[in-house]
Amino acid sequence: MPSYARFLLLLWCLILVAECRRQKSRKKRFSAPAEIHKQGKMNSDVSLSDHLPVVSPLSKKVADGTKSRKVKTSHLLRIDDHDFTMRPAFAGPAVPVGVDVQVESLDSISEVDMDFTMTLYLRHYWKDERLAFPSSTNKSMTFDGRLVKKIWVPDVFFVHSKRSFIHDTTTDNIMLRVFPDGHVLYSLRVTVTAACNMDFSRFPLDSQTCTLELESYAYTDEDLMLYWKSGDESLSTDDRISLSQFLIQKFHTTSRLAFYSSTGWYNRLYINFTLRRHIFFFLLQTYFPATLMVMLSWVSFWIDRRAVPARVSLGITTVLTMSTIITGVNASMPRVSYIKAVDIYLWVSFVFVFLSVLEYAAVNYLTTVRDGKDRKLREKAREQSQNLPCTCGMSHARTMMLDGTYSEADTNSLAGYTRGSMMAEDASEKQERMVVHLSLDNESTGTKKKGIRGFRIIQNTHAIDTYSRMIFPGSYILFNLIYWCAYC
Image (tube, rainbow, N blue to C red; front, top):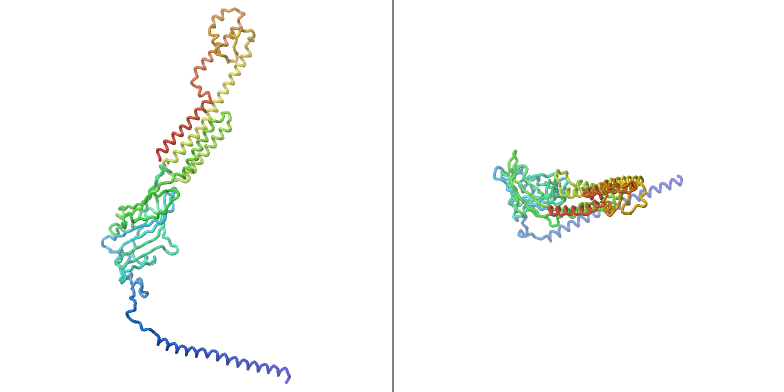
């Protein structure tokens, strides 16, 4: 046999021997703990039996049936034994359901949509003898919203509500508390958006009264009597409730019957609250800018009437700014068919600004007309002065300016001259007669000017601006006094 074959056979024998030893050691390892565990268990049973205390019957605590884990809610309240689709005392007297409300927050007031959003805790109180249960400690049981679907609860809804929901973070915000005698407290956290009929005739100097109405949807006053549990104290509010544009003046409750022609009479509860608007915001955003624009339009009265670009651009700027203010205010308001207080102020201010533009248009037109007349008179006087002979050598008493401008003394010196006396003079005095005829024509023209002295204000454009400086501010101040006395 070759040497390498012997080596392989020897190696194989060694491997077999090692594997046999490993199997024996593994069997010993698993058999030892089992024996130790059996012995320890026997010893522990003996020791526990020796040291167990003896429990006395007097030391046992009396278990409350409401806290027992073995008793189910449906068995304790006997839910399966009754038909909870019918109200308590069915076919009997009306079920009294007391209500109280805690207002958590008044979230928003919308003038455009004419509604308000409120978050509140709504609680109902009634008695249902079908839910009475035995309890040695007279303790109530509290449940969440899962039990509400199995029993009868009042079907209260919000009249004139647009949107409403029960909060569900992190679970439905519903609480049901049942007392052993059958009294039930049903509470839920609701956010409701309801309509509010607002009157904007005095906006923004107005006060609004909004109402949240509660009513049973299906049960008339013969089946369900809805009432405020503690009168006016049934409504509680948080003192930290505040709004940016309104001051909350008061909350109060009322109740009355509501009639529907097809179904009958229903009990209805009212939550009334009065809001007064803060005026300071509108003073800064509306009234002050409008007043400043009106005052800015008066600056044109002190600008020279010949500065056409300055006065025209100033007038157009103030008119456009007033239009922008009016548009901005109406964009945040509902389209009502009556005039609001802010509309009166803004439109009167707009009229004052517009009249200042018209005032300069009148001044500019009259200035142009007068300049044209003066130009024609100067041209006519120039032509007449060119056609007259030279007055050199004439005495001062009988010579005057030929362009139509003369003094009162020169006019009085010609008072004694008549057409007859001038015709009786000889031919050597023709030049003097020509001058006298011209002076008489000028005197008659001066008389006509004195006859239209009543239109001096219209002809004098400086006078129009002067009077406007007093009339416009005085009228606007008077308007402000009347406006604020009437609406404040």
